[in-house]
Image (tube, rainbow over all chains, first blue to last red; front, side):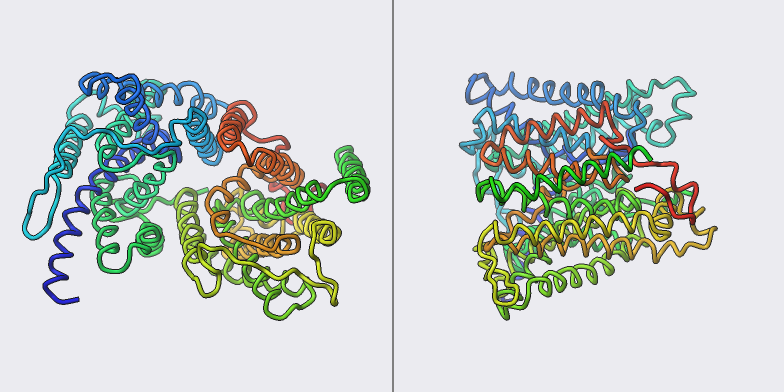
Length: 300
Length: 317
C-alpha cells in the first residue's frame, strides 16, 4: 500500500467513522444515562433501537403516513415504551429487592420479547431501508467521499447532542436526572421523585434510540438482528468511561473511526472483533475509561 | 433434613426414569436427554462462578466451545478413549479460565461482566475465522468418540456415558459446595473485605472459581462430542451464555438444585421450540421479566445465610 493510498484511506476512515460514530455515540449516551440513574446496564438498548426502526418502517411503508407525522410519532412511541417498561417491570424488580443480576436479566427479557415480537409479525422477513429524506449524492471532503445523507446524519446527531447537553445542564429535569445519578438518596431528600425521574430517563433513552434508528435506517437494512449495533454502543460507553456522558460521545467517535480504519487497513473480517478487543483493552489497561474519573471501589 | 430427603427422592425418581428411558424412547428423545445433560453441566459450571463465588462471568460459551473443539479434534486425530479427550478439553478450558480469572482480580460487577462478554465474543470470532483448525464458518465434522475400539455413533450408545459424566459432575458440585472451599467461595461472594479479614486468599478463590467453572464448561463441550459429529460456531455465541445464565438465575442463584432444574426446564424450552424462534423468544422474554418481577430469587433461593457460618462445612447442599 503506497503512502498516498494510506493517506486517502485514513481520511476516508476518519470521516466515515465520524458519521457512524455519531450514531454509536447517541446510543452510548442512552446507555450511560440509564446506567447512571438506575444502575442498570440496559442490555435491551439495541432492541429498543431496532423497535424504533420497525415502528418507523411500519408507519411509513405500510400505513403510508408522511415523514412529518412518522418522525414524531416514532419517537413518542419508543419513548413511551421505555417509560412503560421502567414503570411496570423495572420498578417492580427494584421493589422486590432485585440487585444487579436481576435487573440485567429483566432487560434481557425485554430484549428477547421485543425481538420475538418483531419476528412474529413477519416484518423481519424482508429486510428494508427507509426512503431517505436527503439525497445520496456524493460530496468530496479532502480526498474522501461522503454522501449528503452521511453529512445530514452527522449534523443531526451533533444537534441532538448539543440539545442533550443543554438539557442536562440548564433545565430542572436534566439537573434532577444528574442529581439522581450522583446520589439518589440525597436527590430524594431535596424533593426529587426517584420513580418519576427514572421513568423519564427510560423515556429519554427510548427517545434517543428512536432518533438513532431514524438517522441510520435510510443507510442500512433493518433486520431483527440490527440490535447488534448496541454492542458498538457498549464498546463506546466503556472506552469513554461507563459513567461519563462526554466520554460516551468521545467513545462513540473513537469506535466509529476504529471500525472504519480496521475495515480499510486490516480486513473487513476483523471489523466484528474490533469492538470487543477495544472493550477488553480498555478494561484491562484503564478500567475507568478515558473520561471516567477515578475508579469506584465499593467497600464492605 | 427434610429438603435432603426431597433431593434423594428426586434423584431416585430421575435415576429410574433415566434407566427406563432407553428401553422405550426414540433416538430423538435420547438426543434431547443427552443435550439436557450437557446443559446441566454447563449450568453447574456457571453456578460455581456466579452462584458460589459471586463473580459475574459471561464467558461460559467460550470455554464450552474450547471443550468441543479440543475433544473433537483429538477424537478425529488419534481416537483415544473418550474420557481422555473430554479431560483434555476440560483441562485446556481450566487453564484459559484461570488466565481469564485474572480479569476478576482487577474489576467487578458490570465491568467484569462486559470484559468476560467481550472475551466470549472474541473467542466466537476465533472459532469462526481460524479456518485451518475449526473449519471456520463451514463448521467442523468430528469423528465419533471411542471407548477401547467401541465407536459411539448414535445417541443410544452415547447415552449411558453422557449420563454418567453428568452425574459425576453433579456429585463433584455438591462436594465442592459442602466443602470448606465452597464456604470460602461464598464468603468471598458475601464480602471480600470480611473474607480477607478471615484469612481467606480472595484472589486465589476468585481465580480458582473461574478455572473450575471453565473446566465444567470444557467438559460439557467434551460431552457434546459424544453424541454429535458436527459443530458450527454459530451456536457458540452470546445467546448460549445467556441461556445458561437464565437457567442459573431462574433456577435460583446459589442453589445446585436450581441450576439443575433450570437447565432441564430451559433446555427443554429451547430445544422443543427450536423451529418457532419467535415464539421461543417471546416466551423467554416473558419468563425472564416475570420471574425477575415476582420471584427474583428464582425457584430455589440459595441459602444466603450460609456464608455467615464460614469454615465449618455447611450441612446441606
